[in-house]
Image (cartoon, rainbow, N blue to C red; front, side, top):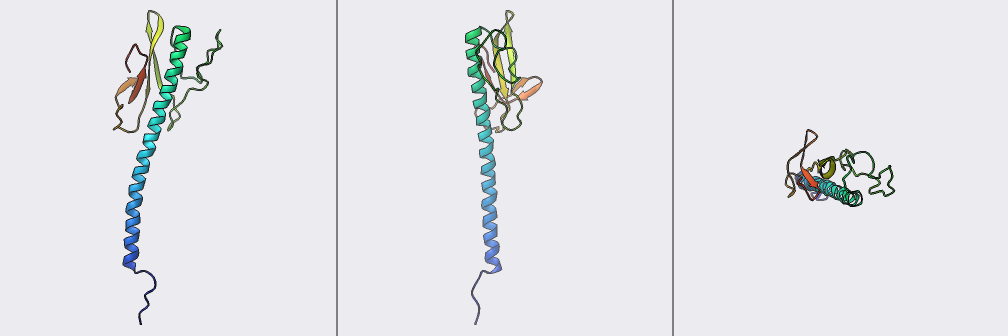
Length: 145
């Protein structure tokens, strides 16, 4: 009389192989989703900064010279705070690249850049800012990224 309780070694190996294949596929999908999520956050961050810059421009007639330090809250003679905290890159915590454009001695345009992780993103490009290459850009309406 043969004992038929339990699994054979072959059955266990097949189950382990199938679970392994599913896990590898799941990890790839998860990694891709995380990159997309971080890229979405980068785009949203630049959009938030862009809106604050436009309100700043509407109130002051110029864009700020530098937004990389802390906030977009002027300290001299103005009481309006446009952005209490400048968002940073979700992966590195680094600031985004910001360039203001000077026209007739005044800051009349700007360009801002981030580095996307997914090269298949529809907005993926190649831009130079502060001697580095960036892959996503936004700008004031009177210039291009």
